[in-house]
Image (cartoon, rainbow, N blue to C red):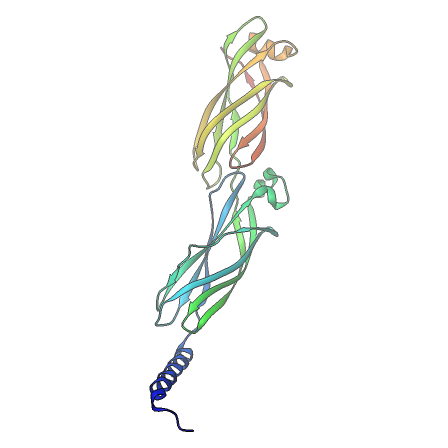
Length: 275
């Protein structure tokens, strides 16, 4: 069958295009993934965001772009919520680009009490999935698989100083209890509030609290004074310590608010009330 003359340019263009695609496919080299780093962000005593960074290497003479992403992350065997990297990521020709895979989780979701999780010092993670890269020969999906460990934040050290009697009446006294919070570990820890029950001589005598404590940076300490009114009725040992200045056991049992969830603490000492 004779091909009409008007179709010859079209067929020639199609043939040229097919040849070009075949040449591209033959010359195309599959991109690769390389794990780069894992780091915590938005850290509190309640939870954090784990940012996994993987590098996409493009050995081709044309630029590529991120098409899609499907990955799953577990921390200590517990699945956690994963997010998405910014759209429109470009991988330059004969170059590379980093893809950050975020996952936000709460320590309470790891199967143990928050204080128990933090006391372990570290946690394991496992990431699996695919990274889809848009190329001249279609979307290429690169397998993602990596596991490792990361360091957990530390509970601040909490110490009780020498209580001071500010005023005293026949049946009660107003006291200020100094407390020092000391950072441990390498993460800055935001502290929204401290709330605790105060016991003197084994008897619960009142509640103390402080708010808007700010962020406790690594290697720093912060001292706060917690005012409380101690009733003498039913607290003989506390009354004697306040009036006579004797040494007495003192304890705080409460919680630190850091992030969305409170974290319990308990601290005990012996101290002498001063005026």
